[in-house]
Length: 166
Image 1 (cartoon, rainbow, N blue to C red):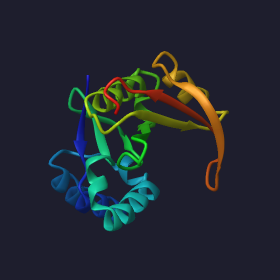
Image 2 (image 1 turned 180 degrees about the horizontal axis):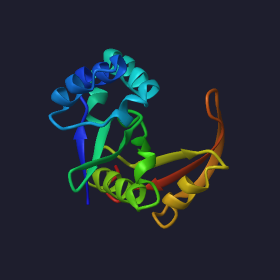
Image 3 (image 1 turned 90 degrees about the vertical axis):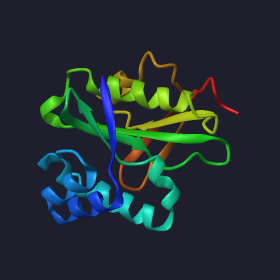
Image 4 (image 1 turned 30 degrees about the horizontal axis):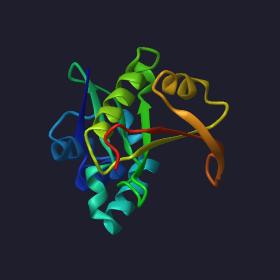
């Protein structure tokens, strides 16, 4: 079972600064040095929360399994006008191939199913990312198109309609 712990802006800033004790104190949980290696993400999310504080409810969660930090997950932001949110998750390389990505995705789906503001869950995945494509298999996602991302290149777009959606 995966438990998510919100990473407040102060924890993200501490991770950016390489200050793991302060980040852990701000999160209220022991974080790992691996999270500091995801500095690029914390920079994006810290900037995002500076301009869109309401997104804090949706982004940047540390993922724990049996008290051990195994990754992070969340959404790219709050639901858009159509009720769409985009999922994101990463497993610490030390814990990959143990089912944690699927467990994180299942919890994120549960969160969306329980929120009437969410009608569609999106995942964007590079066509060569076999592991992520396998992770979403069996969760009801259907390919709806593709897009070009300036940083990641070609991404396939998958969506899943929620049962609680508007």
